[in-house]
Image (cartoon, rainbow, N blue to C red; front, side):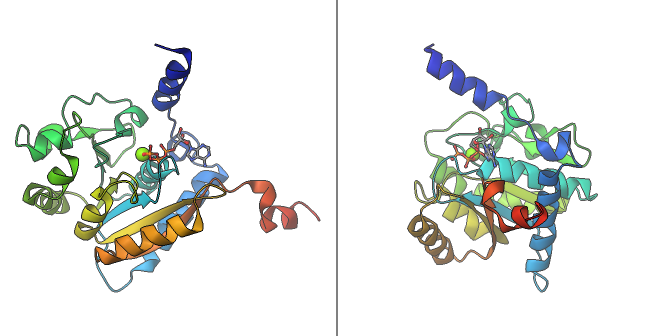
Length: 233
Ligand SMILES: Nc1ncnc2c1ncn2[C@@H]1O[C@H](COP(=O)(O)OP(=O)(O)OP(=O)(O)O)[C@@H](O)[C@H]1O
Ligand SMILES: [Mg+2]
């Protein structure tokens, strides 16, 4: 393996979860604030299933999804994190799990949800890894089986969070947005183009998704007013 590829693989595998490892950190606190905002964004309707997505690749979808799942679990909710990114799955790396059995096996009836779900080091948090990457992700995610899986999971868990591929690349996130109660859109500061974010929002809304809010990722602390204010300026 080339040195560059090896570095990429190490990066992919060494994913740490700040809200689990350092719950008192300001970043973990930010995730708890996002949790509160999500809970208040939808007072009238039931909010049990949500997807996290973004317009393009590597904007922080998986990081946000995993940390949100952790802070919901820390609140005492029974949480299921589903890796529904059947193209570039990472949940099994984040939680240091095997990925032999997962969502793709359940959707092709090779396994039941109960068999494929695993525990994590975080109390109240279970994960359903992607399973082997299938040739037809959109078809599987848009199947009746996926609807049934979510309905089934809703009976077993209080909160279900789904990690997804980027909206502008493939239709998967739109398909899932249509099944979920709400969508959290991640925007990466200095990376996501405004037009791309708008286009993603439009596509999600055309799939009848309810956008709960936007998470701004990668915001440099030096840029923020907050920092200057508290920095004694
Ligand atoms: N705020 C941040 N600060 C530092 N590193 C970050 C931050 N957010 C994400 N990363 C890192 O950037 C990389 C991409 O993040 P992540 O996997 O969450 O993005 P993604 O949107 O899920 O990507 P993909 O489109 O490939 O699924 C990861 O290595 C992650 O650890
Ligand atoms: Mg991801």
